Image (tube, rainbow, N blue to C red; front, side, top):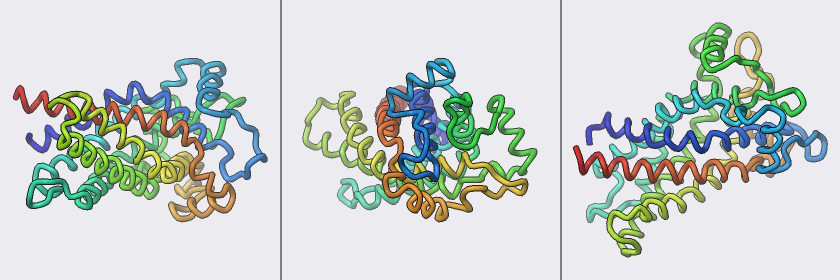
Length: 303
């Protein structure tokens, strides 16, 4: 396919998945911000687990609050995942992920996934920041983390640009790029390798939907374990309050955030909200990769 179409189908497939996974993204964001830089047992727990968090948000803020940040979330999928999946497939089409005999080279898959993820994360960073800040906003009784009080996506965009200029939209990108680089490398390499093995072993019939479904389920496990610590750091960097000149009040950058979380919250702090992360990343990975695989197959077969 044309490289542009590869990116378009990548963005479209993940946007479809976003409608289903966004409520879980809201819950994940709240749980990752809960008890920020506080030791266990020293703060009030508003969200005890994923299910309690759903109940609490729905009860206090209303069911519509579970879709907060959907608009920037969709833009983020189009930009970030469109570039990420598109670039990965372009490298695959060019033979950069394969051995001379045509089999997949796992190391090359990891490098291709990491490179494409890094590119997508950079360009999608502004959308991710808007999404995170909108999803963190809650009623005072259940609020966690910094509350930015945006009135919507466009208001948030205008506010950030007015206060900190265009470059202010890329605050937190130092956390986003490692997050997506690691996650993309784990997700796409495991998906590609699992799919190859399933096809070679003829576990399912040719072109069966169970081929990408099974491979994406395997990929979802790898991405959650690998990406959650970086996801926590990224959420904290994007949501923190800043000074007039755009400097973070809690963290000066990626390394500082890593250090402070470890010192104040321990290793467990990096896996806050991992249940919510899996409930969000698992289905999102599965839906995105299945949609992506089937959309590409449909386009190739009909155009």
